[in-house]
Amino acid sequence: MAAQFGRRLRKGAATTAVAAVAVAALSASQAPGVNDHGRQTAADAGPSPEASASDGSATGNSPYYTDLPPLNSPNPSPSTGPGPGGQGTTEAGIPATVLDAYKKAESALRETKPGCNLPWQLLAAIGRVESGQARGGRVNADGTTLSPILGPQLDGNGFALIRDTDNGAYDGNSTYDQAVGPMQFIPSTWAWAGRDGNGDGKKDPNNIYDAALAAGHYLCRNNWDLSDQGDLDRAILSYNNSREYLNLVMRWLEYYRKGTHEIPDGTGTLPDDRSDDGAGASPSPSTPGTPATPGTSAPATPKPKPSPPSEEPGGGTTPPKPPTTPPDTPSTPPSTPPTPTDTVHHLEDAGTAKLTAMAGDAFTKRISTRAETQAGKAVGKVRIRFTILGDTDTTFTGGESVATVATNSSGVAVAPALLAGEKTGDVTVRATVVGRTLPGLDYTATVTERAADALARTGDAALTCTPGGEFADQVEVKATYKGAVADGVAATATLIKSADDPTANDKGPYFKDADGKAVRTLTGLKTDAKGLLRLPKLYADDTTGTFLLRVNTVGGATLTVELTVAAAETSSPSPSASPSA
Image 1: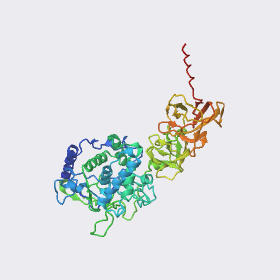
Image 2 (image 1 turned 180 degrees about the horizontal axis):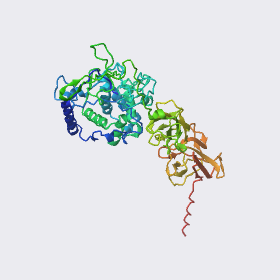
Image 3 (image 1 turned 60 degrees about the horizontal axis):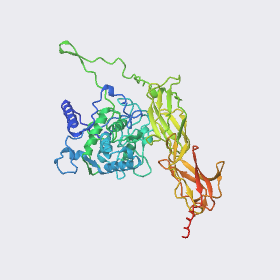
Image 4 (image 1 turned 120 degrees about the vertical axis):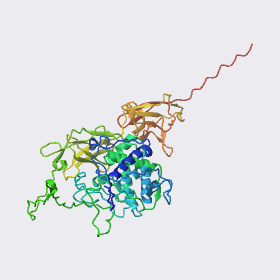
């Protein structure tokens, strides 16, 4: 998770008490209206039901910086001294490039996912907690960190156990995964959530523009509306599934909402405290007397401690007993018990029904996959990755093409609902086990054309015209499918010869093409968002009589409309008065 800055302040009991008072004060004075979700307990330590379906989180639940925002409200403009804002002025400043990346990500999400209502201050709050705003803004002009920001390796030693998923491509570790970059994505999440935020054609987790945009999309998935407190909670918990993390991010969010300002890159304040107190990681090796390079971490190697002398009654001591194992005898390394992922032998379909949906609609059925051992026993707590393959615009709800879901106690992982795109045909969704090289399991989902099963005119006025004239009213119809509005449905309109002969007539009413020529068949028509289709103006030649207009749609809906062409009625002259006698 968060990088090692080469310095960490160890707190005593007195400092702990002060921090407790600070938390209470923040709850009371700095975040009015914020939903305080309480301190994490043993019962909270497991995955929260409010978190996303994805196993773990964007960060793999890596450690994070726990420094609290100052009690004083931030001063919106920087000052040379402590000033009325006090420490708040310093803490409220965000390095220029980092701040620009957050605001650009907010702007991009406002265009692509306006219903999410992502505030850039949320990205700033997460960026502060995850990496201290990219280590105080130590980035180059393109937004890439001057040195990698790596969390501790997730080897199960005090952290989650996530074996390598990227062959070290992002974190340089081909054994275990590590969180990477200023927003601390684990490689398996970056593989699908990564974005190109600075337009250089690359998706780099070490670039603040790429990482901020990816974080925005991650927080906006599942159709979450971040202006709703419940959805906001779920989004933050999905980033790091800890209630203490949720509370901390909410406090920084409210702090930044009260005011912030731009400061030069590289001048931001660096956090002191981490949620793991630095366990499992230490500064990189460096020249004696030289601080370690910020932003790198490595597993700490504990030094063996000598056994203390034992006390005898009366205060005497006896020397420690010599070891029973000869010094030159190699010790047997402890064996690592297999993880649930290690025991998976294959994937099985868990009763997925036939997957079919009309273009633009959500699939009513969802993919279910079961992880099993070689003996066919279900395996829980295994991450299953569902990937939509091929050239298709079908996605999971939320707009993503990849989703990772943990299997339940029955070994079953249920993918998020699929949302059909406009491209019709078969779509392949592949289920694989994260962290294992096993054959995937493919599912086929079929996207059909938008269809209507009923058509009706929106008006009932008679459609009449005189020879050589034009019809006063245009034909408008409404399409529905199973009683609901059928939008975007393809249709044709033909002036047919008779009810029994649907071929185009060669006389009678007609439409005009772009050149003003008579046409009696229109194709490429589509209903609008309200299911309405308004046909062009109709004209009549010199033939009188009754004619038929037939409208057909995909899905079999048909409507036949009667048209009448007749000479105008002339009134007979009134009889003249007889001459008077």
